[in-house]
Image 1 (tube, one colour):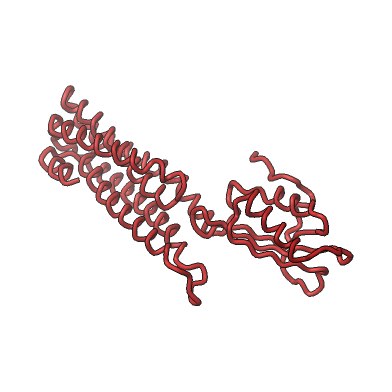
Image 2 (spheres, helix red, strand yellow):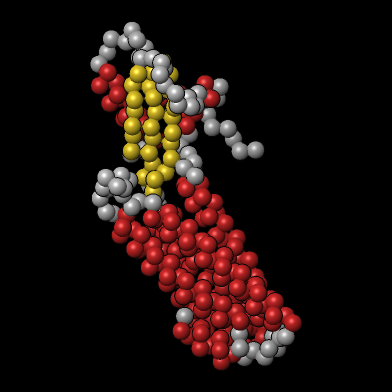
Length: 284
């Protein structure tokens, strides 16, 4: 980052300065991710019954929004340079860009595995990936300026970097918003889950079901289970069997089941549309 700041000032390259600013947010995003994960490990309290697990989601949201701010700044600065194209030292820009490219490849390789299991780490990973693409753009721009003297390549590549940053963070942002809206996790088929529950002997209907994500790899489920009034089996054993289905087959680890023999007095939204569909509808 320091090399790119110095190189950007000496060479007059916007692309290098944009990449340096992005690297600064990379460092901040990784620090934020680490702090959020540390807080998330704290025990729940009476004031925060789910603890600090949501901090990981908020950290990912901050990371995504910060990238959008960077993209906006790069676009504004590039606009000014289109009107008044400054001289750029292509050789120095190319040298610093190649160094930055190798650094970002190493950082992306380190974060890649963990990013698959945490939206928080994915936020940091997206920062690094956008920075890697920025380094590629800097190298291309440096070659064009050094070899052909085409200084207009600098603001053009800078705009390209900004667009790539927006595209790379869109998926992360939609995932974070989905979690904050307490949407059903993508890998859980609620219709299939309901069908499996209702296949168990003694169960008449599952209703008022809610499935949501609290934090990465930490899903929760609450549901009312309507039991046949004539069922003669052990209700506690039945509850244990139902919990095993939810936990083992669907990977949900925070489960609350309410067994009842009548819907009388139950005022919740019953969510029984699964009776008309046995699998999640395919995306159109």
